[in-house]
Image 1 (cartoon, rainbow, N blue to C red):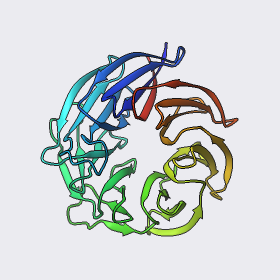
Image 2: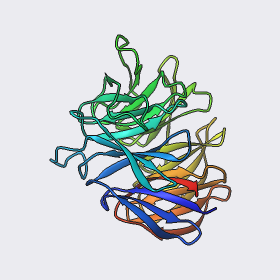
Image 3: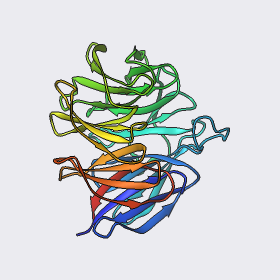
Image 4: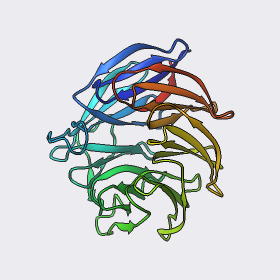
Length: 308
């Protein structure tokens, strides 16, 4: 079987598939202008691509209102989910049941698609309680969703199926962006892009327990193993591995390009880092060293590694 890395390439307007043995493009799916973000279904073969539909948040374009359902093994779109009138879709993640949670940035709404492989429309939508929702962290049971909101400088805890439950606002720092849950889901880790900190939040009380200064301008954070976190830094052009207990840096690697997103290999201690200069860097996380890199289409975003 071959290992394939699929990457959303925002300004190439496609979902690209690369053979990792040869570091070469083998297939691509054309998408409408400026797709953003990528989520993997629990089945391991279905992916969801959001249509942001604008170059960035200052772009005057109306924005997109679709999520594309992709069979990774067959490399084809199998369903398109229509979110109109909600638009500028960004921040996608599935719960353990396979329900899809999507942020509509222009409307500050969290939408839920119950059966995303087949449904044509979302089944639920609730207010996030923040402004300019960007990314989400979804609990395994789907009952709690944490949304990072760049313009209100907040993270909100949302009950997606409880219309009578108001979102709870948390103030972790300036311009919170990347976020992830601990394995036990009792802690939420939030990267604050505007003040260069990471906040450790108790998910039950929604209290910020501590804040630690991190290297550069962190944009994305991922849970790596039980006891570590992987941080991608934009301005510092680097990745760092943090100890989850102390939040101290265990390892560091300069990449020579601004890190915009990352993904973890499903089995090995490897990561795939997308760079703003249209490169993908493959990292050995045990040694925190570069394995290889290859050129991508314009503006690589989130990636997924799978076998075919």
